[in-house]
Image 1 (cartoon, one colour):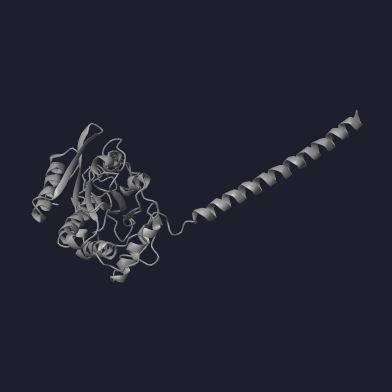
Image 2 (cartoon, rainbow, N blue to C red):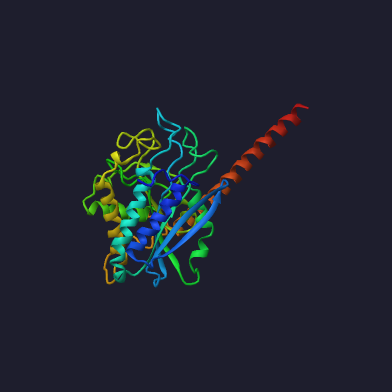
Amino acid sequence: MSIGYRIPGSQERVNCANYFVSKFQEIDINFTYFLHNFTAYSTECQNLLFKLNENWTNIVILGAHYDSRAKATKDDYNPDDPVPGANDGASGSAVLIELARVLYDKKDDLKCQIWFIFFDAEDQGNDGKGYGMPDWDWCVGSNTFVQVIHNYYNSSKESFECMILLDMVGGDNLKFINELHSISSLLNELFQIGRQLGYTNEFPANPISAYITDDHLAFVNYGIPSVDLIISFWNKNPDWPYHHTTEDNLDHIDTQSLKATGDTIEQFILNNYLKNSTYQGNSPWYEDINALPTGVLSNIIISVAIIGSAIAIIIFYAIHQINLKKTKEINQTF
């Protein structure tokens, strides 16, 4: 947070990206990383990708955005001021850095490759009160990255297992929602793990459900099972009413929330990818567990088509008989 506002195109944004590199090099001076530079709305932006355990060909992606919003559009008093972005951006980034440190120490016992991605240019769209930056869309960094994701892996040898996005994971009174673009089998497993670790408030039994446009959506559309760990941030939710205001600062960050998030992701990795683990989760997560099986769905579609055709024939026959009757009546009149 001492770096300042990480607004796309600003020097503080550049400084923050350099900070990420320095933190990963503290873990390992040779930590593999890539700078994904791109231009959005005539503004220079940058995503950062760090790779751990590259000897494995199955990839787990952990992501967060790090840009902060240029205007506090929901602030009743200072709507033109920038947002500090302690929760909305910095919290997820902080958890990624700590996860990288923790998982690096266990990398030799893990049977997967892990990507840590920091997205730029996520938070500048129109939130109903206005734009962060004029006419910008949401999630520009992640969408741009996925368009060129083939440049960062060998599709003939490597494959993606899942993607987990962390967004607003450090605020007071953390309560994750059931984000409906997320693959439910993967999200349900994370909720189950979090609750087993004792984080029952953070992973409620009956969470709020909502569709959220966020950085995971580009990966869902690419075909990677993905989830968004995010809170209810709309309508000034009393649990955390500081979204897109100048009050999104360190005063409203809770280390317990950060710990709950980090512990849950770490345990998810250990459960599924620790060598010799006997854990049975919902992997491979490619389908929602609440979705109908393909065969059943196909039978339903075929049945509906047959029933629809039969109804159409009956209606056509009825109309034909009515018209025939009317024709007879007209002939009789004349």
